[in-house]
Image (cartoon, helix red, strand yellow):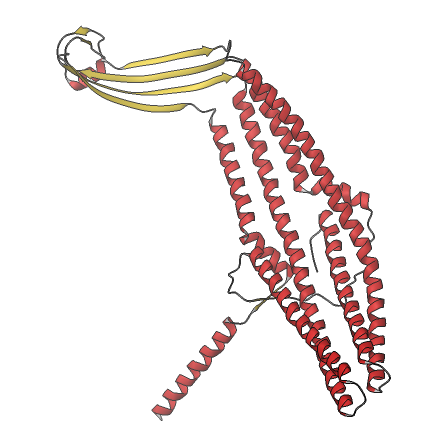
Length: 443
């Protein structure tokens, strides 16, 4: 009885372990939203943009700290022999002496042509710009994920189409063989059917390879391990593929207001204006406050170490004013360079707006075209399918040659591929228009 229980327990453990392994090894099915969320957390381009934002924040905090006074401690020990000046008493001596000096020093800039204030303001602008640049990187990843995901879905459906065509052509090879054996067709007709089947088999292999290539590209964007297997979630076949009621000008105006690259361009102009103010500050004087505390000990004094530190304790407080007179035109050149950089930033903003308009207009025009294409392609696919089915019946009755049947099948195949292509292009450009309006991408 004990042996029976032991064996049953071992079998139960093995069964449980097998189930756990089977569950853990199951391939995860990724939705588009899964891919977007994971990429935004793990993609190295996004991570690099976030690190740049962190650096900009550090620079901003460092600039704010430049208003504060500094504080340094110092200590020195010296030995001398012969004619020298005592560093503590400043007396002229000829004896061998050793001395100790300790102190703390501080300084603080009170005015520097408003350069500190403008530097803080500029660094704050640059930090805000880095936030928008991080959003630009995230948006680029989202769009890359969307495009790659739809390409993967397209290639996945292409596999089904290719496999169906292969199955049909293999069936036609069997029919052609029967007709050849019956003496109803020539050998060339039979070999043509075999050739079509071989071509369709090649198409299946090519379609599977294309699918795997897009899976690789998707895993690269997700920063997944090359050995990790993934599957993607298919879209709703009943989704509305013809639904664009947008105004191109409205989409463009909305895009200008929400896209981070436009905001980043505006901040580039503001940062360069602050750089001009910083450069102009070089023409103004600098006022600084400094102070120190110190004491020391010298061996030629008869007092002990602690007494000398008490007697020699000193304090200093001072103001210094630096007035720029001529610095070899460095400040003038800095002002001229900053002025030119403002003009360049304004031109770059126009270029960015032009690029946004190009993207919006291209997506809008392609969406309209794809919307019409998907209607035409669907009608063409239905007609080609009916024609192919009719050709198959005629072929069975011996009223159609193998060549005509092959032509009909290829026409149907091309119609299927055209429909798939227009279908996913329509989805892509429709989603792009939604994205440029600030809406979430959803399939």
